Image 1 (cartoon, rainbow, N blue to C red):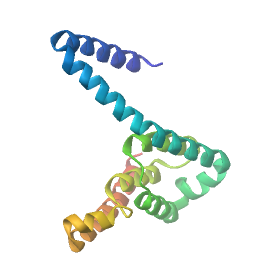
Image 2 (cartoon, helix red, strand yellow; image 1 turned 135 degrees about the horizontal axis):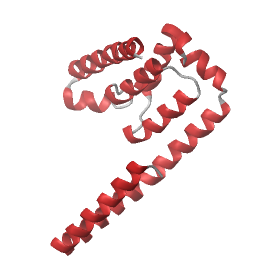
Image 3 (cartoon, rainbow, N blue to C red; image 1 turned 135 degrees about the vertical axis):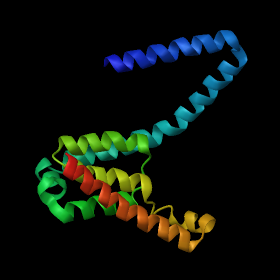
Image 4 (tube, rainbow, N blue to C red; image 1 turned 90 degrees about the vertical axis):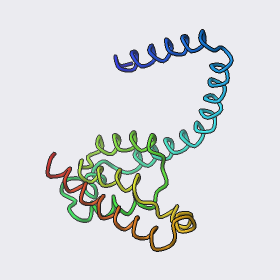
Length: 160
């Protein structure tokens, strides 16, 4: 366990204790609510981590390096942008995935593009967006974010 983890866990414990002494009922209600949220997130989180772990095990590092590495060029960006756009993965799950891809040989620029499209483009959620924002606004938002994700990935490539 890292020093940061110990600091954050200790801080959370101290603040929870302070909260408990200030208002016992609210703290207990908050802990119950947090536990319910944790239980709802745990199964999808574990499922995605298991699937990604199996995929990273089955896909050789040479393939990841070839298609998503620094030598992959435009194809790597396109693969990352498309996969990120159509995949519905929560942000907190995408970070371990990104770390795994980097360890397997993917480039920072391509992983940056993947992460940015995961957060900013939503092909799966597009029907819902159209319902609330309208067809034109939803398509413009997703298109501009797709282009912005590629630009961000290119900038990461230039910087790193």
